[in-house]
Structures are given as structure tokens and as C-alpha cells.
Image 1 (cartoon, rainbow, N blue to C red):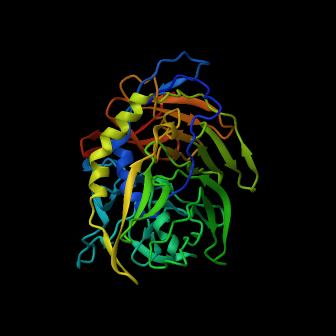
Image 2: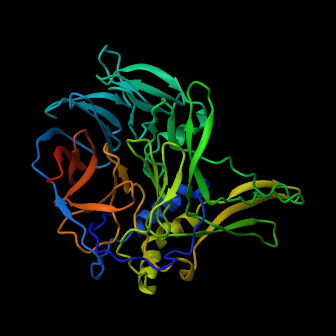
Image 3: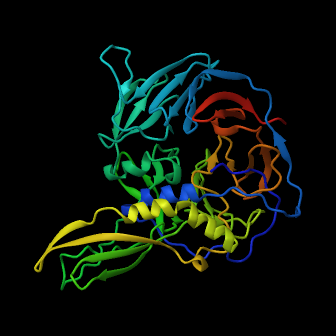
Length: 441
């Protein structure tokens, strides 16, 4: 889904959403696919509560000759050369300062020649700004971080204090982009230790009932002491809430799961001054954790809240019903019981419409980015004022929408450089052109 940008300010009702739960990793990929298909970009009618300046992009100062995928991460170096994590192309490229030529420095193929790209069997989605022109790239195979120098070469490898966290460190999207604080500690989206599932002691062969939590931590890991601290927390949406466990008269087990199409996790970003910002999708406000550890909350920001009608909810369900039915027709697995072999399977059904929540979520996954001047850039999901392209909210550390930036049709934000530089992509289907620009003053 591509949001329609812009927004006309309206303050939300007291409780726009009624379902707030957590991840269920066993079905996360399936439900994520349903949610993407069900996404609906809409326009709403509203009157402006106050005037927020709207700016546009300035002149394009550089255009890349090589195409990239529309999903990527950008890391500008001090000489204006640019590392680009082209996730769709499963590679990392180093563009020269004019963006005229690009060299592949990491991919899934590699090679034996001296200047061949470094091979990674499974690409990561982020580039982490490190000291100077160094960049960290999560290497899933070894559960570590590659330290890239200014030429994109692997200079050394750093071990994560908790290696199992490599999945969220390199995931991007809902997990956000990690950052490095002034003392060299890694700040990233962690995971709480899963609580043990509930096992029926009388029937230990049955699938255990999952215990699902409603939050996840933002943590700070010290590479020297190997200590990990929790700094903030995100409220999570549960994509597949557990309903009940059914055992038929033959001893076969059916685990009934709901599918929640309307929920999005809270989003977070790490600002250039060391501040952690958590966007509450519940009511579009920011929870802050300052570098000194102070926690504070800023007021709700203006937003175009769009009410979900019964027709909207039905359309969302109808759009993914074939995928749900396909998932429900998966061959059950066999389990050994004292009565002999029996089957176990999951059965999905939609969350009742009255539990969808009354309003569409304000953002979708990955809609929050931090520039290099301690501002948040948020792309609203519903809006009115966009003129043919995306309209981003730019938010200062007070939690105010300082201004909005209108993008041309077909353009999206890719990343940031120093001195107010923006990197944008001109998207054409599955390909995109990287361009350098700035906000017109």
C-alpha cells in the first residue's frame, strides 16, 4: 500500500483503537502478508485546526545512473559518497559523490577475485551509522556485525553482546534502525524473553498454548561489558491472537487463531542527538527517552483520523480471504499420542469486526525515520492535503509538527545526509532511481 500523504489536522478521539496485543512469531509472516494486502490508502474530509507550513523539495543536485529497489537504507559518508542497502536487489552498493557510478560491496553471490563483493547468504535490511565513515552491517550467518570502512570493505567483525538479537538488529521495517550512542553502545529493538507456553499436563502431546505479550523493549548493548539495559518499550499489536484449543471426538487438535487486520505496532527511531522517540499509534503522540535517561511525553499531534465503517472492515476481510482459506487448508501435522497417531493444525478466522477498532491506524510499518538534525519524519497513512504525492510530517524534539514536506508524485524518502541533504527515490514499479536533494527553504 502506498499512503496518500498529507494531513489536515484533527485531534483524535480518546481511544481510536481497541485491540492492542503482541507479536506471535509462529504466524507473523502469514499475518503480515494479510495485513499488507488489506491495507487501504484513503482520503478524508476535514477542516484544518491550525496552519502547519508545507515545504517542497528543492532542486535535484545528483541523480544515480544505476537503478535500485524501492526498499533500501542509505548511509552518506563525509565526502558525499553513499552506501545504499538495496534490499530488493539483495546487495549493498557504494555510490561515488556525484552518484554517477556504483560498486557492489556486499551481495549474496560474492566471488574469488580480490575486489569481489563480500558474500552474505542472507541479507540484512539496515545500515548502522558508526564512528567516522565506518558503517555496521548485521551479518546473520555469524550473528555479528561487519564493520565497513569508507570504501565499503569489511575492516573487522564485532560480536553482539547477545547474539540471538541479530534477527531484530538487522530486520529493519517494524524493528526500526539501530543507532550508536556517544559511548559506542548499540541501541536497538530487542525482544523480551518469551514466557513458556501452557502445556496440558494430562495431554502433554498436544500443541502448547502460546503465551502472548503486549510489548517489546528498546535496549542498549555495551560491547565492552556485554551488559544490556532496557531504555524504553513499544506497545505491540498481535497479528494472530489465540482463541482456543479444540479437541474433536477422535483426539485430533485444532488450535483456533484470530487474524487481526487493523493493528500496527508502535514505531520508534533513534535521533542523532541520542534521543529515543516512540510513536504511539494509539493516538499519534511521541514518548521520548532523552540521552540522560529522562522519560517524557509530548501531546497528541494533529492527524486525519479516518473512521472504519462496516463496509471498510468487510472489504479488508474479503481482500485477504483467499489467503486465509489457503492457510487453513495446509496439511495437518501428525502427533503421536497414547491413542495412536492424531493430527494437529491451526485454524484462522477473522477477528470479529467489532474488535477491529473504530479508526484506521495512523501509520504503517516503517513509517518513522530520523534525520541527522534530531527531527522525526513520519509518513501518515490517511491524509487530505497531499498534492499528487506523499506529504511527510517533520517533528521536533518538543513533539510538534514543525512543518510538512510535499514530495512530487512517484517519489519517496530514502534517507538523509548532513547539512539538510535528503536522498529520495523516484519509484517506477520494482525499480527506483536514487536522487540527492534538500528541502526548499
